[in-house]
Image 1 (cartoon, rainbow, N blue to C red):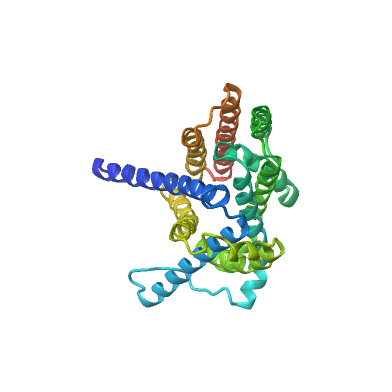
Image 2: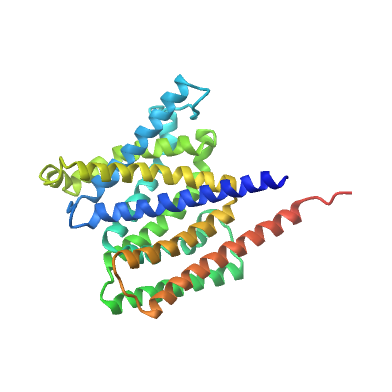
Length: 330
């Protein structure tokens, strides 16, 4: 590989990582504004989530149409969410997907952006537990040790939020439920991917389409329809622009996540996501003018350190298993 080629590769990786960070952080701040800003003042979190799913569905459908009309310029896997066979296989996963994004958004509604990462930090821990329960996968002692570090950081963060008087028990509970739903989705996604020919984008299309339908009765049960119809900013350009930005960013996260894994590796993606969360926390405290105690920052660093160590330990274990399964060359 020449120096120019290597430089181009580094530039490509840098652009993708920066794009992932930017889109992910913007999504969190836009959603926080939509869910709990005094300027928006709309108590309809399921409606906001529904609109974002509809936006992602429309984008996927548009890409599908463009791929059919201009195959040389656009590509999108063939398939339709109206296929009965596909519906039977994918819909149960879509229920978990809907649960996951609703809990994550509700967590963000009730907790500060700075605490959002801590509130959802037990995803790794629940992934270990659920992988053992559903797949029988055992976890090594070093990895379990990393999980204990993450749990200790989570409890310290909750304790510091409580002492500061800013702890939302409701938001923290939604964060825990979201932390359970994410690994549950990942585990079952492996069984559903063959039904969509291993096409992640097609699965995303189906999930958003089905979730758009699933959320309608939930909005009715949550009494959000009258709230929406009587909302003072229903015809506000600012509101709909912000809603659309949130929807486009939600779609873009999936794109940049796949792209980041493609140009780097799953390990680098996890490290990038952890570092992004740290940067996001710092931005949030500055943006909202929040003053946090030293122990509060220690809790964040503990969770970040435990998460990165867990990623490193799992990567080393995968590398060791690969080497042990690879036959020696004669």
